[in-house]
Length: 572
Image (tube, rainbow, N blue to C red):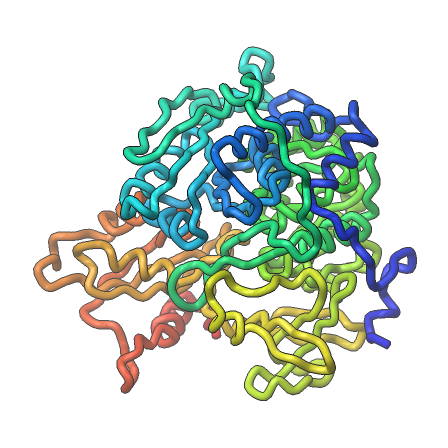
């Protein structure tokens, strides 16, 4: 019997049998059950489940006209908005595969999301379309996009009907601007808004996808090179969508604030798919604003809010906090970074809310561990999630370690991905067999206590955690080497009072560039060429990077020197 059985929620089974159907069927069934019930709220407009399904089927029919077939990978590059949900399910309606992309990525980064999944169709918002088009145009003709579908944010709401609380001044320029459509020299650009008012010319095929068919291909970075695609099936996503609903006392009456990005595995699975499955309502925020969040929670009587701790800290620090009514909240939790104990205590004392932290990776379809809502521990990953067998092992021998000892966290369960796209080598390294089960190696170090709760102790992988966003130094370094003035670069973490950690670049300039390029020049170039959360916030120039006898850059020495200079503990 697992040691955590004593704290397992008494109302829940330890394992579940999820539906064996396509994820599309969750929307179709909710639309049949609750046709007039609110599915999405965005900028004050309410989308019913019937309207959401109709829009998704219209989008699917137009994608079919472009030649999208079962198994084809389609890029979806958007911030949170109804178009993201509509298009996500439209792709699934065709038994095709969603490739969700972080909208912070720049053209140089976007090229990989076109070439690696062999994408020929991409759907994006008008503010991001120029970068997507630029990425495609920079590729050889045979690898370029054939079709780019572009939506304006105002395709789904009337600016004249939006209140200032829904649309603050700081959002107006990027949400209301009508961007011109970009040009593809060897492909076609389509207006999403035109599609939604145009009758498709072909009928939709039958839905045939089942548990073992690939549904989504989210990308995750790592210790080396470019991001890797994680092959998730309808079954892996379905399990955690269903389990997340059960774990959070989910019912069709849930009202969930969705500000965690839905391109990310947590927002995609634990918010979007879970609420569509439940038949409950998603109140969508395109990006974070503490006063919009307070307003929306109050206005729509939000019951569930999954977030990262910095959002909670920011909201509680608002000078307008006394105007907001958080009494409707019954569940609040999240992950990506530890919740400070003092803030968790304030939530409990002032609002009666226990902050439930969780843990998971793109490879595990979001949660592999979560704190029981009724018995959470602070700054803790939680206990293994429904259907999960998780252990602490020696990272060298893979032998299981006893309670209290630190080792690598490994997990086995039906939500674990099926391997890395086109990377059999990386897939082989990520799994091992034990006791008739296949375990995934997370690369994270942790320990388990006497009650079965897991705690993070360190990372095997070299990773920086900036406000919950994972930054992989190898990927940033690879981008920086494209700067004509940079001879070498090493990325390390530095402390940040608000973000927890931030990115710092230690740079060796080419001889003829010394004195010609400033730290600000490097930072500005990075801002133009990589997602803002990845870009170095600080740069220091050195004559040479420390190297081992084999010529490898000794990043750990630079990291330890940085932490020592700040008077902080060194990252391992």
